[in-house]
Image (cartoon, rainbow, N blue to C red; front, side, top):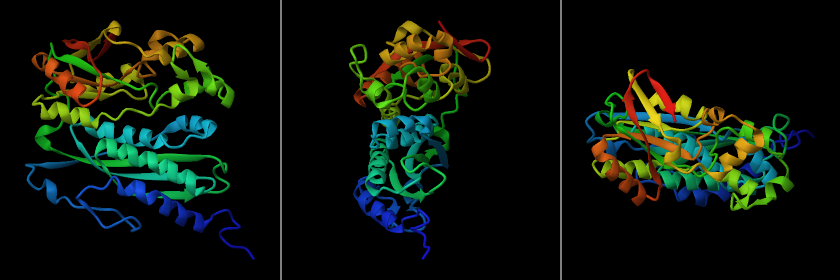
Amino acid sequence: MLDYKSAGVDIEAGYKSVELMKKHVQATMRPEVLGGLGGFSGAFSMGAFKNMEKPTLLSGTDGVGTKLKLAFLMDKHDTVGIDCVAMCVNDVACAGGEPLFFLDYIACGKNEPEKIAEIVKGVAEGCKQAGAALIGGETAEMPGFYPVEEYDLAGFAVGIVDEKDLIDGSRVKPGDMLIGMASSGVHSNGFSLVRRIFTMNEQSLARYYDELGCSLGEALIAPTKIYVKALRAVKEAGVTVKACSHITGGGFYENVPRMLPKGMRAVIRKDSYPVLPIFRMLMREGNIAEAMMYNTFNMGIGMITAVDAADAERTMEAMRAAGETPYLIGEVEAGEKGVTIC
């Protein structure tokens, strides 16, 4: 007799997935969260923000992209959730916002509860790093659409900022300093090119490289840095961040101009910080032009802020205190809107 399970959708596995992920989700809760896991929607009280002059909601959505192919090959699923959260909350933080809550969406060919729980464990870890609550999500079992061993992962974050504290780049002026925070590696962008450069199989990913200090797979799957706490620390130090850029797909050339007003140009010095070994390896093994590297990858800098020159040292001290590694990588000049890398 035909039923949903024989069609490839295991409802019981879905129930087990929820039970296994509950402890991870619970660890992300904030006082504003109302209700528990399992409702049709997630409820979040805005009472704590009623004293803001003009509370303004911010949102961000993104996925992990083809980096997931690496997770499949390595059978390692506990960090891609961090990537998913990072791609969303870093964008919210770029506008000066505090991430409040996050929702995830997992679509898979076959619901393996232990694997789903590992994915959500990573999502929860990312939420904890960002101070956001994981208030809901969806696991969709889609047989015949995804291969049984594969899945896709995406997410959605909501944050808040007082309108007067929005970071929109409008106050940037010539002489402002550009401070970059170190990335952990490739993060979650450029993997379609990465997969063309390296042979992607278990043997090649397990190979250890002295220049990386780890295996190729370990270097590539390192989760995306979450910069929320560092940016919050800068604000708490009394520094006004005038502009902020999350270096994602499109690298420096696409993302840095997005933080600048008309008539301002960013000048970034390549020798102002150490380019991570994985990028030198990618450039060498793929025979990729340097300009294309800066137009595709973060090259070791995951987030760039613009601050008044007088605030540069205080900014870097706050970032260090939050556990990040900052570098003074350049300055703003008057000129055609864009970026010069020299």
